[in-house]
Image (cartoon, rainbow, N blue to C red):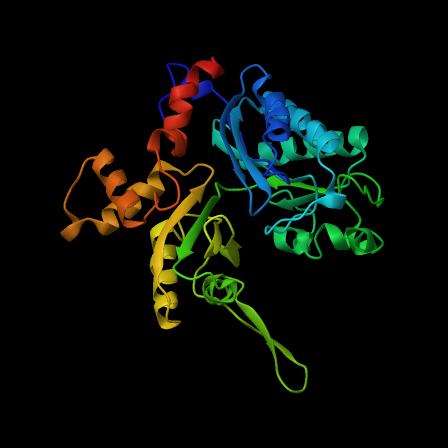
Length: 349
């Protein structure tokens, strides 16, 4: 991605904090204001969801600046969000639920692991919030998977902290009633990708999720022995949700490595499973930003006979065939990370 003559020496990290507030614009603005106020850091996306009661924020910038911005936003969230009264469709552990650091340019995954550690130590020591490390930053295998750490959610956190196996990576095993706990780490670029169904039955959406997600499902025989049945798609996490604002069920998907399972492959598999269950697919959406390559891949897949097309045409084909504008308009210049970094590159000079 071209960002100026000094591109080779530019260190750029993406950070995508998820906050447990999707309904109060004033709270969201106060939190994100702590990001846009840090020099060199560009706030690329703010996407609140009322049903999830969650806001996904995307920023990019130099490593130290991004850590500073993430901490400032976390501090604001700890002051403005009270988990004791929080309700929403999306699993969550705390006011600032998860803060991943993602290498974009001139930065290694190992460096992002260090950034997560720096951020986690500061949150624990200065804000009194227990912090867990996940994905590439995890210190034990059981904590690589975010869903393992989140199991029991905020409501089960007080009990979880009593278990020595779940001692936080930073901070004491003390329950912070207001803020809960925060998870941080380093990972590959994740695409939050949701497929819309023409039913409002959440159970159908969840059944599809069980069939496609890599972890699959666990069943027990009459003797009580558990057996795991893997799902069909690698590098995929999924669950079924109900979107109240449009009264539809949705297969909520995290594509943890889009080079393994890109959006169009997930979309096609959900469509197949939905048809088998007697429902249809009406489109999909990307929450946050998406790498250009993933849409180019979809555009090529859907191009008749592999007809060569220019980049813009391939993206337009992907948007149309995946139904990315079915709920809200998909604007490539605001949703594709390369375009957003290009348009905000003045902020990194």
